[in-house]
Length: 441
Image (cartoon, rainbow, N blue to C red; front, side):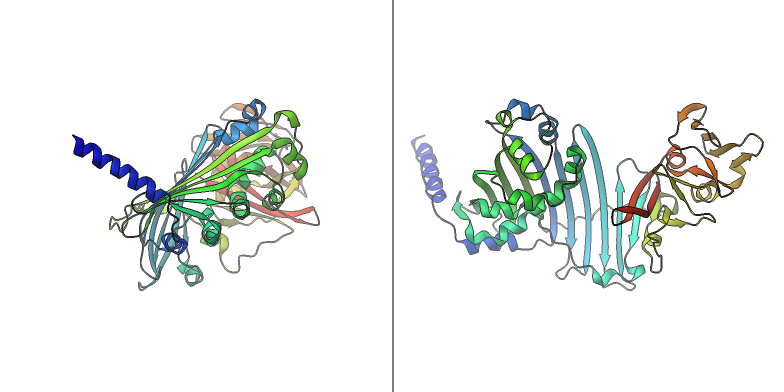
C-alpha cells in the first residue's frame, strides 16, 4: 500500500513540476502546422456568460441568442500528399434560440483519374434532393486548391505564436497557451465572418465592419485568450480548446458602434463572456471508406447551369432560376410593391406543371393551377387566393400589365413547397434588378 501511495505522490509532483516549465515555441508551432491527411476533425463553438454579467443582459434577446447558440462541425477527410485526391464527408449543425438547422456536404476529388473527378454534393436537412456541382465539367478543378484541415479561428493564433506564454501541462504533449489582447484582436475578423449572418438577423442591422470597430475598443478581460492543447505521441494535434474571454459594457459598445442600445442602460449592461472553441482530431490515419449518397436524376439538382459560361446575368432585369436552370419569359418579370410578378405559364412549366393544369377563365378572370395534391385559385385584381380551398391573403394580386396577366412569383412557388431566395442588384442605392433562385424540395 505504501508503495502505491508513494508512486501516486511522485506522479503528482512530476506532473506539477512539468507544468511549470516553459515549452519551446517552435515545438508547439510544429504541432499546429503538422498536416493531417486522414482523420476526423470536430469543432464545437459555444458561449458562456460569467459572473459579473448583469441580469438585464442575461434576460435580453442578445443574452438569450448567445447562451442558446451552438455550432458543431464534423469533417471526415481522406487526402493524399498533394491533395490531388481527396474525399470529405462534412456535417454542420447550428442551433439558435431552439431552432436547429443541419447542412451536409461531400467532396469527391481525384485529379489523377482519367477523366478527372471533382464533384461537390450538399444537402440541407429537410430537403429531399442533393445539390451537385461538377467542377471538372466546367473546367474549374485546377483552380481550386486542397482543403486546409485547420479551423479558421486557429490561423491568427498560430501565426502569432511567438507572442504566447506557453507552459507544459503534463508528462507529454499537453500545453497551455496564454495570449494578450493584441492577439485576441486578430481573431475578430474570423469571428465576424462566423457570426455575421446571425448578428445581422438578431441585431436587425448590418454589422459590416464590426471587427474593425470592435478592435478599436477595450472588450477583452485581463486574460483574453487561453488555449489548452494536447498532441499524440506521433506529434498530431488531438485536442485544441480555446477560450476567448470578453469583458465590456454593452451600452458603451452599442454607442461606439452606432447601434441603438434599446432598453439597455449603462448601469445594467455589464458583460463577462467566454466564447469557447473546442476542436478534436481523431480517427487519425483512418482507412475507413466515407459514406457517399447514391445520386439519381430524381434526387439531385445540378447547379452547373446556374454558373455556366455564357450564362449572363442582366443587372437591370429579374433573372429567375428554378433548380439553378434559367427560366425565360416572353414578357419580362415586373416588380410591384417589392413583389416579383411573372407570366405564369413559363414558371409553372419550369416547376414541372403541364399546360393542361394551368386553366384561365377569360370571363371570370379566374386562374387555377394544379400540381400533385395542391390546387391554387386566384382572380385577376383580387388579393384573395385559395390553396386547396383555404383562403389566403396575398400582398400583390395577379394583374394585367401590357396586355399580359402576371402572377406573384413567391406566392405561387411557396404554395408548391419550393424555397425562394432573392438577391438584389442595385446601383447608387437604387434597385435595378436581381436574381430569384427557386429550389424544389
